[in-house]
Length: 124
Image 1 (cartoon, rainbow, N blue to C red):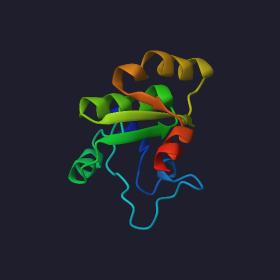
Image 2 (cartoon, one colour):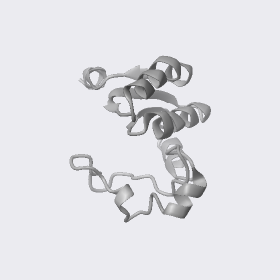
Image 3 (cartoon, rainbow, N blue to C red):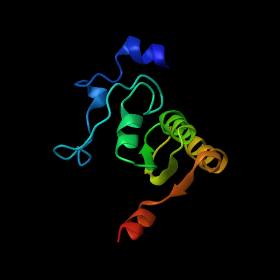
Image 4 (cartoon, helix red, strand yellow):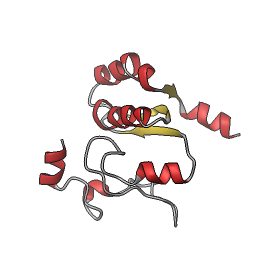
């Protein structure tokens, strides 16, 4: 994956693959990780340093390619010592089978599942 990302330029800062979807744009001054080189959001990026400096120990993980990028970030976050919560209704996979496999067989080893409703309830 690292070779493909480098060869294809998958995540250039100003490239299409790095653009924010409508409604998900960062707020002015909000931290945006940079430097990603692999499947995990932690791989080659400044994310771990930012979280540690700001004493953040719980991460919410959401996104596309559940069995690749989301799962890679979950595993890396766990191995780095973070409490990892995968947001069930804010993730997507290429198929229902992939989605079910990750949620039924992988997540419980590295973190927990949480829904948007549960997050909203905890935030008040």
